[in-house]
Image (cartoon, rainbow, N blue to C red; front, side, top):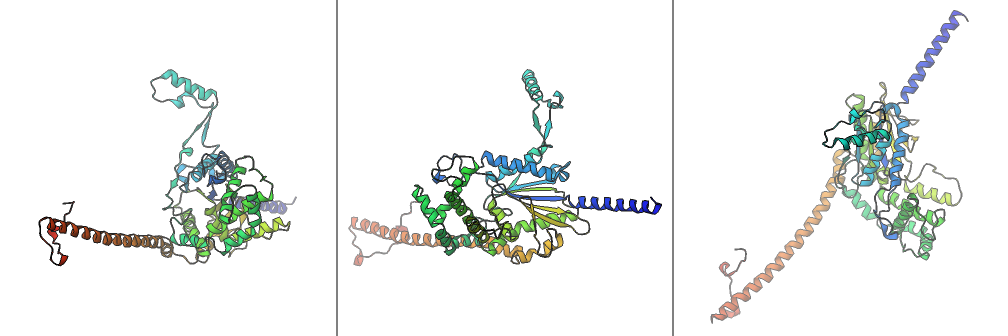
Length: 474
């Protein structure tokens, strides 16, 4: 080989090596934000199945799902998790125990190889503590070491940030904390869209009634489908007459899922209100990461299907229309027009990966492990931070912090004001009526007193002076 060829080969190897390192570097995010739906739970309403002991609570299956999810993410993001410190992790979930427990299980799975001290490499010295009964202490410590137990470390004791339902400001904007959304949900009660879906499921509901279950409208179908789905998640036998592979089972679960998608997602403005807080928080996290002022590497957010709905709609992945269309196509044996339009099952997750490229920081979104395009201004799945920030106004109906507060906080105040005015009006009316009755009775008492003294009232009337009125509070 000539000297020039040798030099060219070395240069080629160097360039390829540099390119591989660059690609590998780009494949390693500097920060991840994970928004997941809680794991499998008991049904919210046990009306159709009284065998449940803790309605709405997380099942053991739900814990196992999130522990497994944590294990998967630990492999997927092993580089970012290496030598991670507690201050580099942020946890937040909604007020429900099922969301909090899911985040905890996911955390244990995520750090399962780093959050324990593996024994028997541990010595008795590691367990020194002041305890009067030394024999008992030695017995316990010897038992831990001999059984090769796994001892937790500080990564297992991270605290979650939790707000009340009324004060939730990031993960789940609901009727309880946003008046506009409350008004929207009320307006959809039994509207023409719900009635149309109810009509489409009429035959399925009749079959369910024929089996002895009281399901008469789309709302009851939602509750019934939730019960069936929970039984399936818990590996319980199917309800009598409704095998898990039957069309009736599929129709009921579809009714439950479609009702949630349509009624909980709401209008485009409602969707914008729901994504606005978290979208802005993502911008803040990623922007401060580029400035070197954000120490976070991992963010775990625990929510519900309603937490995922608005982002799935925002990115044109799932909405109630394509979901219903897919269901009809599937039942007819036809190709799906929207293969990615699926209901976010329990333990579904959205993951924003942030790559702090020095020249052009960018973001990727994965939904259940699959990347999706999130910026209209980009051709691939990578969205620059600059474009991500630029597209927020058009994706969120040009909301600002002030307009968000007007739609949500101000609307809540308006609702409260109406209730206060009604209360005051009724209270004032009651006071007036009470005062009239009081004056009437007082007049009768004065008249009786004068008659008892033999003093006849002039023209059967009498003026009551303040001193004549008896006040029990004096």
